Amino acid sequence: MASIAAAKRLLVKRAFSSSAVATSTQVSAPSNRLLLNKSTIPLVGQRAAMRMVDLGMRAASSSGGPAAVTVRDALNQAMAEEMERDEDVFLMGEEVAQYNGAYKVSRGLLDKFGDRRVIDTPITEAGFTGLCVGAALAGLKPICEFMTFNFAMQAIDQIVNSGAKTFYMSGGTQPCNVTFRGPNGAAAGVGAQHSQDYSAWYGAIPGLKVVSPYSSEDAKGLLKAAIRDPNVTVFLENEILYGESFEMSEEAQSPDFVIPIGKAKIERAGTDVTLVGHSRNVEFCLQAAEILAKENISAEVINLRTIKPMDVPAIVKSVKKTNRIVSVDSGYPAFGFGSEIAAQIMESEAFDFLDAPVERVTGAEVPTPYAVELENMAFPTTDVVVRAAKKTLYLPY
Image (cartoon, rainbow, N blue to C red; front, side, top):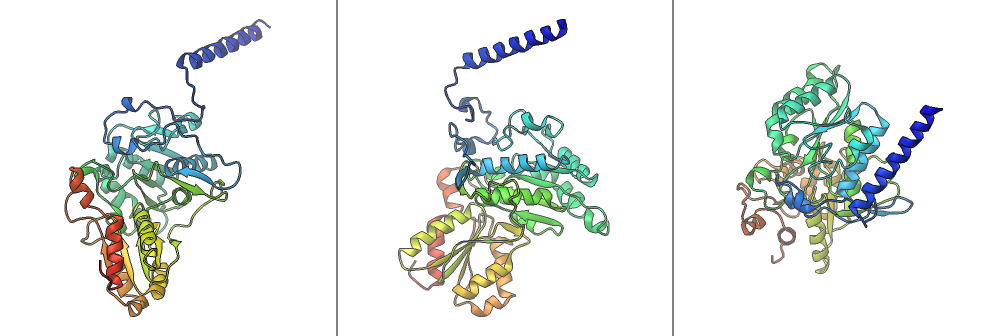
């Protein structure tokens, strides 16, 4: 009896302590807000993206019907649902646990799943990438987060050799279910060494699946598919999109929602020209389509979603309808995403339906400038996409 009474007193004391702490912080915001002091965020190259964090925004409700959800929260939901579904799934990377992720994508996962499954690492990409590949070869299902895919260059041997080739070299007996995820491509003002787009790099490697989502539904459905896929998957996110909100259908809010890898999505139907892109470039394509529509030009917009395997049939079907195509990506022009699309069209029946040469809109052939005026000229914009579309139609541009 004495021990029960002591236990009760301890519980009351803890309740009072929790109440006092909550009162002393004087937080007037709802409890589901992300409470961050921007001035305390370390300068580790993330400030450009962090200024787009939806601070003070309430999380979207999933009580029924469509809801506005940020890409950040969609990724978080995907990881949480898959970790609940399968105890073999775990997350490892720099600052993913106690700091809630460099971009707050893993917010709350440590509290929910503990430090056995949400693991902070030292700044040693080769080391923790090797640990993730080894864990996958042993039958676990790691999610390996890179603070940026630029840093994954330190671990390229683990990804390309130890990861991507093992299934083939073992004669199909040794799967390697590991998902490498993190921001890819340019953000804003982070310089040449933090702005590269690796979609073409990884897309050239047999044994890798490469995913590049645009919307919140893309992010959630494709990340869940990547985690479940028995192959090595490179999941390329975008820093600037993290804070962007997209409408998510009631179906997409379900824990059972998965988007198949390798299937493109027609974001906007059209008849005069096809605009195809991935990640943030889909936004420029949609904006360009709106501008073109005011001039009675009907543009079809394809959100490719997956770099490899590429949904070539979807591209071919669209070109056979519109007879013109513009590819849009932020990578370098040489040996890139647009080059592959042009080759696929030339080698398919779509070539006979072209009424104009394939147009490519790409990043500039230069290391990304730091000066904002030059940086703005180094990547695709809506106006450039509009001009490229008009060029295929032989209109003044």
